[in-house]
Length: 87
Picture 1 (spheres, rainbow, N blue to C red):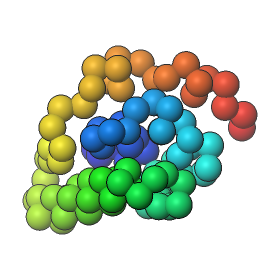
Picture 2: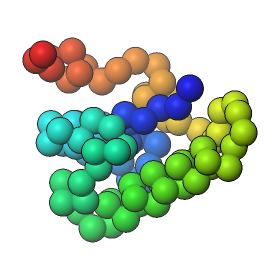
Picture 3: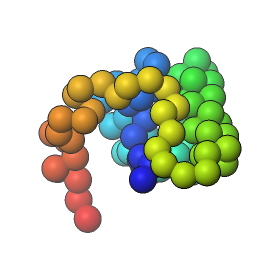
């Protein structure tokens, strides 16, 4: 299994940045648009996605760690703003 809809593991990305990405329609790594965030954050996210994709291709199975441990806040429960999303 691979998480492809969270940007929080990226250095400098927190809940507010992730919320802004999701509100702009960027809910998966494949949807990432650099214009939604600043230049430095866009570079970090791009490198993170590239590293994750490279690791997945090189890995023959199992889970690959791409950028260190995930923050506790992202693993304990979803942000409160996710429950207000409309379908």
